[in-house]
Image 1: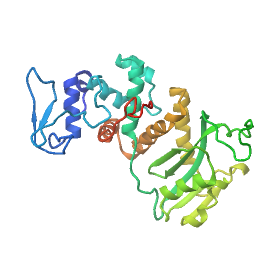
Image 2 (image 1 turned 120 degrees about the horizontal axis):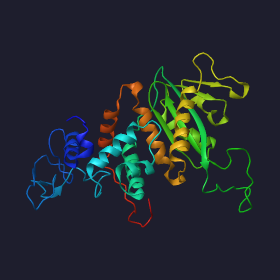
Image 3 (image 1 turned 90 degrees about the horizontal axis):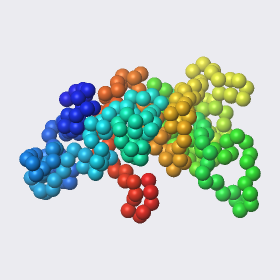
Image 4 (image 1 turned 45 degrees about the horizontal axis):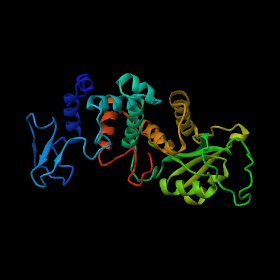
Length: 314
């Protein structure tokens, strides 16, 4: 089934589209995985309700996804998914609140649930034989929690350098391929080395700047080349970090120009959003409608509730 304008204006059409994407071979019970289900019809049952012939439980296409138990019509969900996936630098909750005619609180929570669907659980390492992976770190936004110091203890914190009070982000990008970014508590050599070691194939050619955070890379990978930015060296043959710098540029323009503010505890969700769009970009042959389908499929098996059972908020 194709994504048409009717899917964005009609809740029934949107439900049929979601069912076609999630269940291409027919309804699948979200409780037991059975393929034997009966559609419940009539005035007593809401549209899209099925009953499993094996476990006898009832389910809909939203059960077991980030859309579960939402009162927002499915056509508005589908439009939000399409807009958030198609906007290169993101779309603010205020913009969705005005366009979808829902409350700002609902739009904000909807955006976070869509970002959860965008989260990639792929653990396969980046790179490989003959491939190049660029690694770099950046800093964005002011810390909301200070890193304790063994030397200073509880004495007042003295800011040192421009990045001392900002949130560190480490990113890895495979040239012509995917990116992975991580928000870490403190950009130490141990923390950064752990991320690089766990996410990059050992046969990879690694390119970084002259930061001492990557000193261990020489013995871990097939090759490790650096460019010395402090000496105005940015490209030497095919050695550069311009690809990852380009990703950081898109991320920061979106965060400053569109979202403007981001709580530190939510930063990892925004990184998942920008990672998803970069990894499913037009240059890789993925168009907007295909990106929406990937988000729909990624929503399965994920839940994001406003308050967790332990009482903590999102």
